[in-house]
Image (cartoon, rainbow, N blue to C red):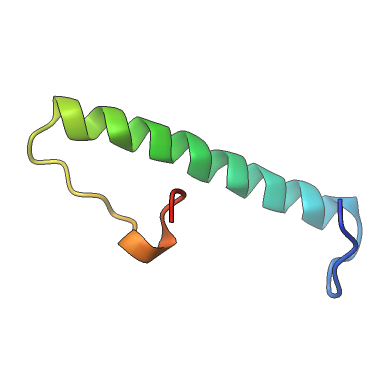
Length: 52
């Protein structure tokens, strides 16, 4: 992992990795929901989605 300025140890890196993993899993689930639920609307703005 990079040692970016402002990161203070592995605890912060692990926290960031968990959020990245969550966002990837959520993006995959959203793809399923778009197919199975016709009225699904994402709570995440388009510019902040995983694929963007």
